[in-house]
Length: 157
Image 1 (cartoon, rainbow, N blue to C red):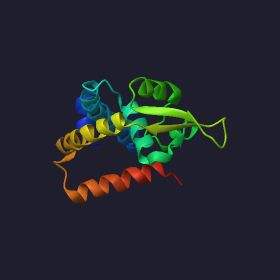
Image 2: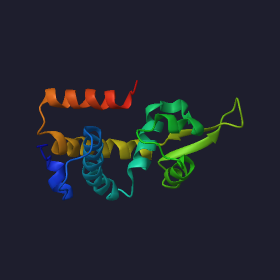
Image 3: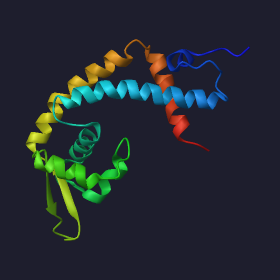
């Protein structure tokens, strides 16, 4: 008889999953939902969302040269189809600034402001602490294995 996973109980399922890949996928979705809800609560206190913070970090990572706005999406952790709206919002909050590239006026470069850097400096330790609370019960070896397995899952042959 097939074993029933903890996920079965959480979802109120009485039948085994049809294939182990289904169970793995649903475990990923369930875990993401629970962990990201906690992160969203933290960001909400700062009038941010995970995509907004992700854009801010991408822009800050490139430094003073800035990044062409159309290039931001490729560096996002999770894709967001409306980068323009996110950049607009961060500009309105004065966390980033835009300006036309002097070499190619069609290109708009996005740079982080000091206000944006200050926000990152305030939030990063809080996020790291939250992640430690969320996953600190796993050993270093298990975290490394989890990371390796997640990378392998993304890199389909």
